[in-house]
Image 1 (cartoon, rainbow, N blue to C red):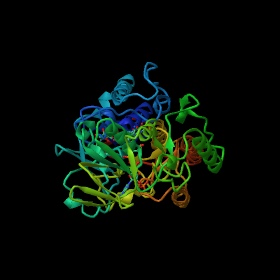
Image 2 (cartoon, rainbow, N blue to C red; image 1 turned 90 degrees about the vertical axis):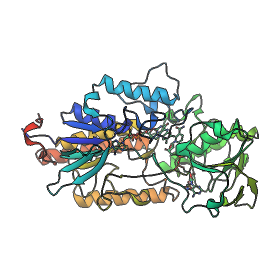
Image 3 (cartoon, rainbow, N blue to C red; image 1 turned 45 degrees about the horizontal axis):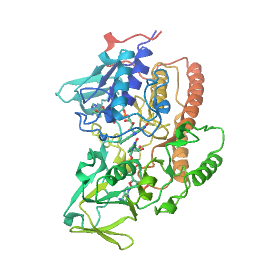
Image 4 (tube, rainbow, N blue to C red; image 1 turned 180 degrees about the horizontal axis):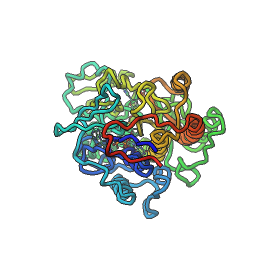
Length: 456
Ligand SMILES: Cc1cc2nc3c(=O)[nH]c(=O)nc-3n(C[C@H](O)[C@H](O)[C@H](O)COP(=O)(O)OP(=O)(O)OC[C@H]3O[C@@H](n4cnc5c(N)ncnc54)[C@H](O)[C@@H]3O)c2cc1C
Ligand SMILES: NC(=O)c1ccc[n+]([C@@H]2O[C@H](COP(=O)([O-])OP(=O)(O)OC[C@H]3O[C@@H](n4cnc5c(N)ncnc54)[C@H](OP(=O)(O)O)[C@@H]3O)[C@@H](O)[C@H]2O)c1
């Protein structure tokens, strides 16, 4: 009979609530700290935490059945690609259904997370209160700290119009009758360019690199529900899907977009059912990258110049942990070394949930990560030996660098099916190691010795 570690979770977005559920259901005493007054993080439009990137007409681009948790389906009345309000309601319903609300302290931001000499975590909350925990789960999201162009474009300080980041975009009111440049080829750029194209005088979509445009439906089904077998080598699946895209959608350069310098699956997917349509209607004009800004003018890499009122930088996000001492845990240029995106190689009681960028939806992966952490904290999963763990991290980095276009947006990529498949395999291997080790608890319960739950 041993005591289980008292565990804190930072963030009650879709990742944090999945972790809280997994830990709570497995007998771990868990407290989640949430800066906002409700769960759902990014999916709460105009969230009080000021961290949400949701815009008024945002819909998910991973389909409902892909995004839902394994044991809590979204209502069948939902469309295939629901609106953000429906998604936020779904997360609320999940928390109530599994009675998780009492484990979440709302309007409580974690300002500092410090590792004490004895290995426990001391959290300083925004009211100044401190609390001590044996283990810490980080689920603070990675789409809230905007990455602006680095370095800024020459002349950015002379630009007479408005420069903004996609993170602060709300709706297309600001584009009415104006000349607009949307920069980027990710999903923010697609959505915002399409919205601009209905009201702006001119919408220019500028990009430094092309992308394969993935439609929301293929063969009458949401595209992400097409069969994708992780046992088939990636190169084969890539070629097949690329051929399918060329045949059904066409090559991006046919629409005046830059030719992708990579194969399908070698960049985070750009999903849009509408962008090509709007380009073909003549309402969006593709452009190469911005070269410089000069007063009212934007000059592009092909030498063309346009008079522009608004530039929206859809240039992605930084992975940030403002509560950690940077010397302990940080992600410079979005790089962070973790075993399978969850376990820190040097710190045995900190874990990350949802810190991945899937080809597919995040939620079922966060759910699986939560269960994996619960196994570990209960001594039912043991990590590989340190050398093997480091070798695995190095191999993962190497594989990602080989496969993906070099970009700060491609440091935490995973394939949905492959990740779940590999994680299940690793959990089985770790269960055998844990058994051999006599189900030893890896994280001792030290933070509040008299109040700990007891492992079965
Ligand atoms: C515009 C946009 C559209 C997207 N569309 C999709 C999609 O269709 N499908 C998909 O799978 N993914 C999508 N994503 C990715 C998105 O990251 C995930 O959907 C999801 O929001 C990840 O959940 P999370 O819990 O990890 O992070 P978040 O949703 O960002 O939640 C993090 C939570 O942590 C809290 N928090 C942060 N710091 C602290 C702190 N110090 N103390 C206390 N609380 C804290 C925040 O208040 C927040 O509630 C999209 C992202 C963007 C930007
Ligand atoms: N409807 C939806 O569900 C929806 C909508 C929006 C966003 N999202 C999600 O939100 C996340 C973030 O997406 P995002 O589109 O905001 O960011 P992103 O995927 O990181 O894309 C950033 C884009 O900006 C480009 N870029 C970065 N720096 C640049 C620079 N200095 N000059 C020119 N181009 C630059 C990148 O090009 P390189 O490739 O060359 O780096 C890339 O095209 C993703 O997970 C996405 O799927 C979903």
